Image (tube, rainbow, N blue to C red; front, side, top):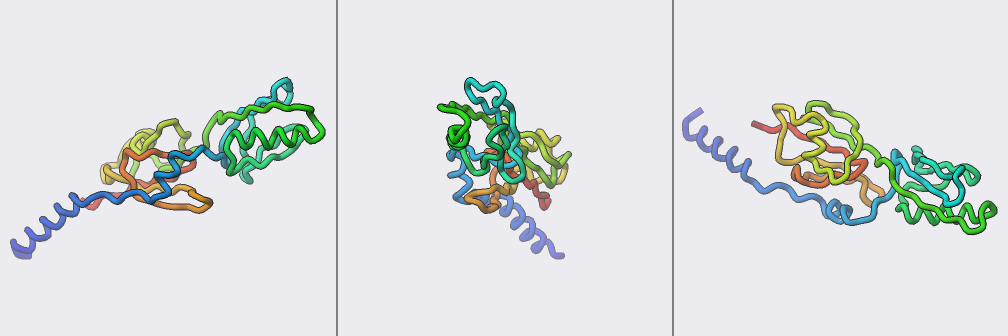
Length: 185
């Protein structure tokens, strides 16, 4: 290889490192401001005021439902906590309680997943205000070959999975799958 070809190749590699990072898909930024919707893996604290035997901690099952005493399964997947409160109140009002008052709060969010060039890939509990960089730290840090400036996030938006390349400062949501890619050099 001639010296001139080597310098051209070296210059191209240097410019590739300076290229602007890809912006996340439009739905990613919009989804950050949207109210949190429940899904399988969330753990909820449901309080029925004046009914201690109905108040407890419940998990959203694989089909997106929570099962309560007396009323049975209630669809929770895709709903916000206020929407689930109203759904439970409606079922309780249907022959069980005269004027039920229900409070629902998320006790534990569904986990996130991290793959690729991290020390320990896997499933981890979600932490509020988490970024990709925080998720990498929870997974033991970057591997020596990791691309440390960006990652791919796969998230469910509008009922379908969307993958986008984001900077490491981008917020993570419960249920996201993060893929840390290998750097080229």
